[in-house]
Length: 228
Image (cartoon, rainbow, N blue to C red; front, side, top):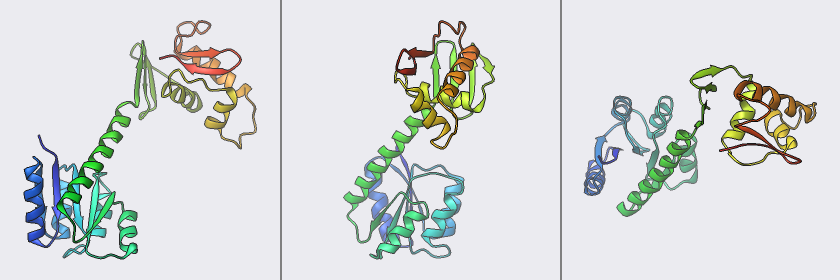
């Protein structure tokens, strides 16, 4: 199924031209001609991208963009007939992903859409890998939960932070100084022994045999790493 696009502009000829061109590329296009209609459609349907004119009846494009951002992270491209930089900056500050200045070439519109779609797809891929599964261990980074053989393991906040950092960067060795700085921060008054204590407690909770770890390993003289 083609990508779903919402085109919002009170100039019907512009909408007609964009719709025709995008549909030729297999996209599904809906149209709205004022801000209130656009906002309602964005609430009612799921879109892959929204092309949003700045100058609209009832609600302007900036207000529509701002309200959409309260409930959706759909990519938004602002269409503006004004050339002032402040309008462009303001559009992006309201949560837009990009802008195109009128008059525009439809090929430019298509190119921007493809670029933003690729960017959005990469974000989705990052989200997908926020669940790490290795052997009997499952780490859900969004819910901050850890399971061993399907049984939830209770970790402290810092124990989870250490495990998440290592698991999301498998086979990368972090020195104790690195871990102290990244997890506890540069202002932390403690020393690297804090890291050793947390690694020991973490192994006691997630490893079947802490002295022979399966997940959190030591690179002697260097630091710690998660074995993929």
